[in-house]
Amino acid sequence: MTSTFRHSDLNIIKPTFDSPVTDLVIDLEKLRERRLSGTTHPQIFFQLKHIFHLLESIGSARIEGNNTTIAEYIEIKIEGNNDVSEQIREIQNIEKAMIFIDENIKDNSINRAFISEVHKLIVEDLTPPPNGEGDKTPGDYRKHDLSITKSTHKPPSWMLVENYMNELINFINTDQSPKYDLLKVAIAHHRFVWIHPFGNGNGRTVRLFTYAMLVKLGFNVNIGNRILNPTAIFCSDREEYYEHLSAADTNEEAGILQWCEYVLNGLKIEIEKIDKLLDYNYLKQEILFPMIDFSAERRIITEIEGKILKVAITEQIIQASDIKHIFPDKSQSEISRQIKKLIDKKMLIPAGAENARKYVIRFDNNYLLRGIIKVLGEKGFLPIAETKTS
Image 1 (cartoon, rainbow, N blue to C red):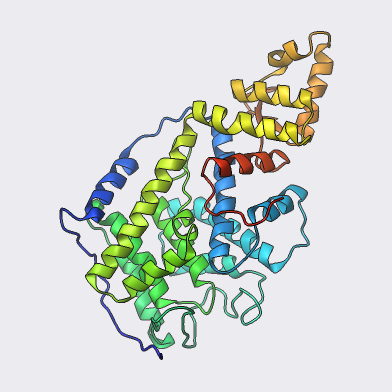
Image 2 (cartoon, rainbow, N blue to C red):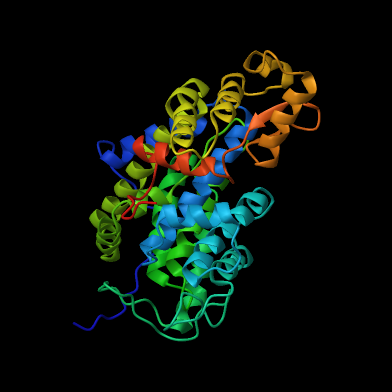
């Protein structure tokens, strides 16, 4: 069946008082306003943030058909291999774009230039279609008409794209009552896909566009705040994601509300789940200690290294005197050498410039990463299920 384009107005849908969407908006507002006073050390928190950025990037690429598993990507990160396939580069590009958003969103509007820069990062050094996931005109709106695979929706003619995108950008930047903020996020995500402004990379770009909106609205990732992994909403079930997008494509109020409920419910589940990691008691007992046990069992670390790292986990910040009980017959210099070995393996890092000779565990760019990913998976924190094992 040939699809045809149908114009629709861009408006805020206002759910009724007894709508499930209204309940979700209220619950998410409470989460946004809640001050998180997590007990997790900032350097440990930012390692978790880095890991969830990594998972977000893999998940977003997987929605578009990239079949790289978490395990495969982790091995590339650990080995530091620069000679990578296009599928790996696609994921690396999403990671870079997330870093760009975190570094620039506070002082910049989500405007044409911002969106274009995200798109450029997304498709950088990738082969354009039909053989790759790049774009012939990075950062520029498409100059041709297209269709969306597995969709009955026909995007607007390329000649209308700029006007529709200007309307969308004005929509997200127009001040309205805060109670509509999250509805705007869900509606803007669908509208971006509905427009399909770029020749390729629209799915990856819209999910980062959504991430940027959420951070801008206060669901941020600074010290003392939370980690966001919004792609987990969309990538745990690709078919469900596309099904709800199709419902919204009708541009009828019921379909738009169904889409909003899907997005906001997924966001609420993810925020509540990941916020648990700011409770250091939970993180220590349920994630970090099992990570060390896994690494020791696999002989990724030695027994002595495991003991030192468990002290580092218990105390969060350690110095040589904290591990003296592990080496009762060793001199101070010999204990310092044991610490240096773990620093060289990137499993301990200095606890800030003001804390000379004090250290924090590191697990986001070394062999401990295998263990923490495994444990996060067992505890339900991974956005996608693995289909291969390492």
